[in-house]
Amino acid sequence: MGSKYRNNFFDSKRDWSNYKDSVLDYYLVPYLQKVKQLGKPICVVDMFAGRGEFNTGEPGSPRIIAARLQELAQQGFPVKLLCYENYEPFYKHLVTVLKPFPFAEAVSKDCFGDVGRIAQVAATHTTLLYIDPCDVVQLSLSKLGLIFDKVRQNRSVEALIVFMARAFMRQAALARTVEMRLEVSGVLNDPLVHAAEEEDDKAMWLEALYADEAVSQHAQSQKSQALLSDIAGGDYWQAIVQDSTISWREKCESLVDRYRLKLRNWFNLAEALPVHADTDATPKYWMAFVSRYEPAFDLFNRAGCEMIRAQRQNFRNQPDTLFAGTAPQPETASPATVDRAVKRVAKPLPSCRWKELRWRTCGGRNVGRFTDSEVNQSIKRLLKAGWLAGATGDKVEENSMISPTAQMTSWIDR
Image: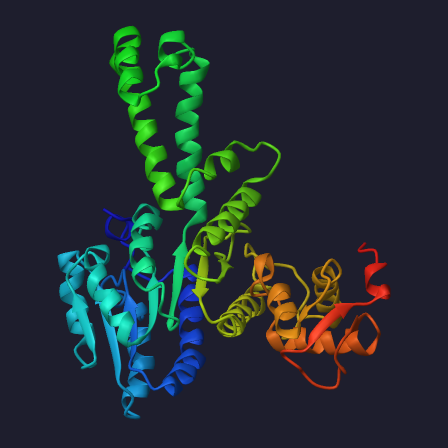
């Protein structure tokens, strides 16, 4: 059973939940305005809907999504909301929450057990999948892959995925600790155990030589590692958790980087926004955004900038918060900071389109730092100052080819 069931998740809304929901709500506005022009029905699928609202009356994702879809429904656009929740008490409350919205349906199923229907809807609708599991163990990439495979040919599918990298790394570190104990004790280095090729054979020798406790520990460790690999879509996480040269936060960031690469098996765009609690420098989780339509990233990144800047402004003067004691920050990024970021990206490139330079600058670990407008202004400045060539610098030319000049290639980043 997931953490939201056993830890009174819906008693009240935590700060990080507010930030996550603000990104969802902010993104929905421009997203829906864009896709309503495509002439297809619109569907949002909330794959882990919960009870729809908190006990305090604060909205959960189903209410947030329904309110935005209702604005389009009132204008005559065909919209649909599917909310999956298979925990009976929450499902019953969700039905009540969605009653005012005739286009919304609560589905009392595990979302991964209804892949066929989701794929069928995506074939006829412009579709946004909102995937916010209650526990990291529910986010199986192999199961998500079943859905993504079904909609592989459909360009009009995007997804927001809440990836709990920090919780994943805690579980990975625990699994690694168990293995290390067995290695230190010499159990796994026993020649008979070590030479066993099959897991069943290894378990047999462990039981025969070292009794039930070693067998149980090894079996639990293997089970945990298999689950983690299923969540991550591979065993690449093992090298990250064993790397003693990087910090805990860097391990989480490396995991997210590799997870994004896995998502690119289905989507050509996969970026991730860190979401912090007010008191913690390591993000609580990352919101991954995937799409086959690259310009959509500008909208998501803008939502991330809005969230991060609002958090910084609200809490810079309060003790024991992430931004405590920091100087007041403007509502826009420093031009010098943006210029430096663009230079770092542009310098090693032979050439690229204007918009690609912007997306590269805003992507990776820069998501939520600079808006598309700020980067466009930076490119203009660098063109006029002779750092870049290929466009005039007087206006944004999205498809023009831009190249670094000799001035740029000789620049030393300090």
